[in-house]
Image (cartoon, rainbow, N blue to C red; front, top):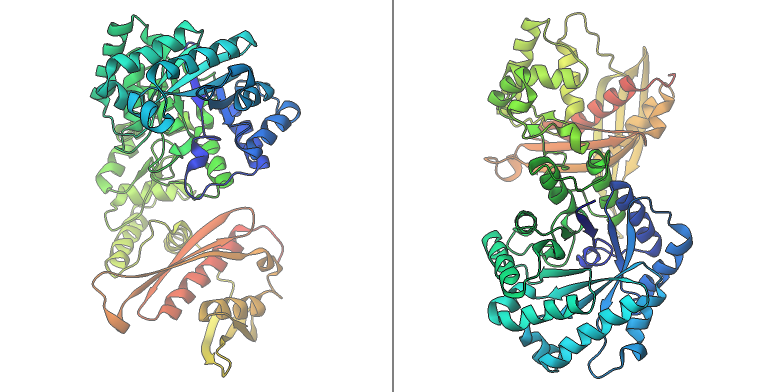
Length: 528
């Protein structure tokens, strides 16, 4: 590859608040990044972090990378210390990686105030460390920390750090926007000035951008357009403060918008799956509105959009979602027109094109319901049940009919609060009464209903309520407020979401619960 895709999720990305990778996590992340086709995986800081030292040791026998090479990260030798006796430099070599990336101070203010040494000694630290790494058979990359801030303050000194690294044998010198304060025009101006001042070619340089101005992706792309061939990113933009340049957005922009081949064939289409898998390992909910790979990246709400999409999906999509492994979705809301309803129904496997009267009826019903607080945007299961109920000859098999339900809340003397629910239903001609306790009214109702139905529908045992969201609708106040409930249910193979709306939160929850069980039972092939 002419371009070097350098991922630092395991080092810089791991500095995000809330992320704490185990060694097993780090190995799993590395495998996914390799599958995505990145060229370099910076695994961490051996010697400084025991967990990272263990990672590099285990990686020697547990990782079989197809596309990427591992990179050990560390700093230059300490001021006044012989490089051959510097313990941290020795740990970099002991990691056994073919590439080592060292961070060097390139802002004279940091040299003098943070390192408390001289500019000349800092240059010697860079030269000695790079020469030592190269002499020991390593490819050496140098991250110039605070490059852009330092270059604006004292361009002569910052340029001298770059030259010192190259003179000592560095393969790449990376310009780091460590504080994340740059804009694209500042990036390109600095690169042009550095090239003119030093005679270094732009394609020898690298770029590393933080996202404090929300420009990390744009700044990275700008640097590549200015001739840089090495760019550092993190998966999903993970990193300290607002994060780093998002790997998936950067490579998608470069490959799809600029036509640059930055990944091996067949890898870009794995972007969405890999992004989601990495979010799961980090224990962070995927960003639904993330560019390219987010669940909402190609979701359309307006009826006007849907009308055009019906003719040609690319009219309102900037790319074919499939090229990054994503899907287009149509959202059903009060803004929906007939085209939105038709496309959404088709997405769910229901063809309304041949039923214009039903299409009109469903469109009107959705608009009427949403005017009173319903929302099907995130409740595909409830929407599908609604459509099926309106199709000619359709028979939406309800698993039971309700006679009544009752919920009691008991506050006991010891301070515990227990909910008890009783449901009376008819199932296949049989009247069933069941009672159950729960930690809340909805939990008690769920338990009681399952108790009543499980004898007839054993597959209900695999159903699990995985999320419960309550929203008080705008314009509603106090205890008379209208409540919308979203329930997410899983059978451990797939998930579905249902909605209920009512002035009474229990009734809203009951509606969503009934839809959840109805949909789940209709979708399973398990015998009753």
